[in-house]
Image (tube, rainbow over all chains, first blue to last red; front, side, top):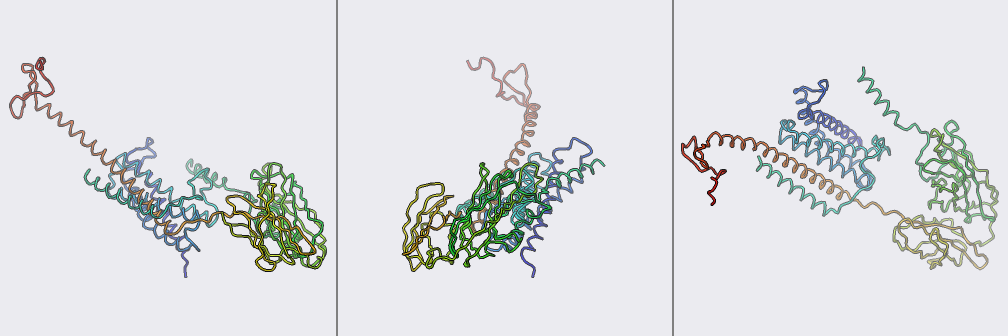
Length: 195
Length: 362
C-alpha cells in the first residue's frame, strides 16, 4: 500500500513544477507591454504567445493539483495536521497561494491573452503570479523545515515568517469568507456594468 | 561561452554558500547520550580538537547508597562560538558507550534543565563560567564509583567550524551503606519538570522512611525562602502546595526528610513553567485558509475592475475629442454675427453658448 506521504511528495512535485514554469513564463510575458531595450533579449510575438499559453496551462495544472497536495499532506501527518505553528502555517500559506493563483487565472480567462498588451493588466498579472509563487515556495519551504529541519530559503537573509502564526477564531474566518465572496460578486457585477 | 561561465559561477556561488561545518552550531538538544553518540563529531579526533576549558566536579561529603545526591559540574575559561552554547555530559566512565551514569547504578532525579538527561545544553554568560547541577540517586550498592564530566562546544575564531571537546578528571565517590531507616526520596519518585502556566495543582513528593517532610521554596534568583504547606496523602506520599507560576518563572525547592532519628536536607530541586500548547485546530486552519484565499481573490478582482474602468475612461476620451472636432466642423463662426454659429448641417443660426456678446449682460 502506498502511503499518503508518497502521494503527497509526487503531487507536490507536479504542483511546484507547474507553478514554477507558470511564473517564469509570466515574467517573460512582461515583454508584451514592456519591450526589452536589448534586441538580443527580445522575444518574438509567437514565442510570447507560447509563453502566455504555457503560463496559463502551468497555473491551471498547479492550481488543480494544489487541493490534492493539501489533502494528501493532511493525511500524511501523524497526529493533528494543524498541531504546530509550522503545520498551521502550511494551511495559511496554501490558502494565500491558492488565492493568488486563482486570481491570476480568473483575470487571464476573463480578459484573454489581449490583457498582456495593456500595461496595467500586464503588471497586475505578473505581480499576482510572483506573489502566488512566493506563497507557494513558502509552503514548500515549511515542508522542508518539518521533514529535514532546513530549506533552501535558509540561504536567504530574510523570508516570510513561518515559525510564528496567527490563529483567527473560526467565526471570524467564516465572516471573512462571506466578505470575500460578497466582494467578488460585487466586483463581477461592476465589471459587467463597466463592460 | 560567456553565458555558460555566468551559469557556472551562479551554481558555484550557490554551492559555496552551503555549510561545510562538521559541528552542530545550534546544539542537538538535551538527551540521554553515550560519550560515543554525543561525540560523533566532537569525539572523533579527526573532526575535533581539545577544548581549552577547565572542568571540575564536586559532590557532597557523605553519599549514601540509594539516596539523593547533588553533583555540581563547573566549566570555565572556554573559547566559545558566538552563540555561547555548551553541551555538558555527566558520565559514569569514558568507555565510549554504556557509559551513562545509569549504566553504573546512578539514577538521575533532575538534570540542570529540569529533565532527567545526562547531556544538557546551556548558554554561558559573559563571565565564561557555568555551574550545572545534577540531582541523582546514588547506586543501591555501596562502593567506590567514578563520575566524569565532558564538555562540547564550538569556537568563533580560527575554528574552521571544528568541534571542541574536553573531559574532566574522574571524581571518585565513596558511596556508603546508609544507616538503617535513613529518610530520603523514594526511588520510584520522578521530580516534576514543569507545570502548566497558572497551574495551582499540588506537587506530589514520594519519600521513604520519612515521618514528616518540610519543604522550603524560593523563586530562582531570589534569596528569601518560604515554607510550603505539606499534607500527608498516605504513608511516604506528600502533597506540597507550591504557588502557580507563569512565563519563565522557576521555583527552587528543598525537601527535608525526617523521622525520629534523622533529618536529611535533600538537594535543591527546580520546577519550571511549561509553554502553552499550540491551540490550532484542523477546522480552524481550513477556514482561515479559505478566508485568506477569498479575501485575496476579492482584492485582486477589485484591482482588475479598477484597471478595466480606467481603460474604459481612456477609450472614451478619444471619442469625446472627436465629437468636439466634429462640432468644430459643423458649426462655423462669422465675424459679422458675433455670439452666433452657423450650423452647416441644419443650415440655420444657433446661439454660441461659449461666446456672449460684450454688453449683453448690461
